Length: 115
Image (tube, rainbow, N blue to C red; front, side, top):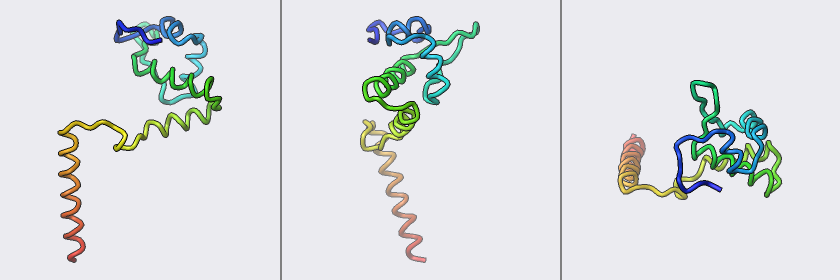
């Protein structure tokens, strides 16, 4: 579905062909799904990024394969975007920063417990 020679931006026609969805469906989904907001160029044409195409494919899967309603799919995408930190891949720098924050919070808690 996604092309291997990735571009930065795709037209609605290209996205329509890639996702096998009509352009009017893509435009309608924009009005229903807050997570789908392609930018527009100076001429006012939609320009889709890889992230937008991923969102479209997620929406398509929820609506067509899993038979979600639009409201249910919106809710599912919203919940998916609040993914727990444990499910993400963190860099060593991020892990170190989180450990520092954790230690500082423990120190603050200890100070508060003393008073």
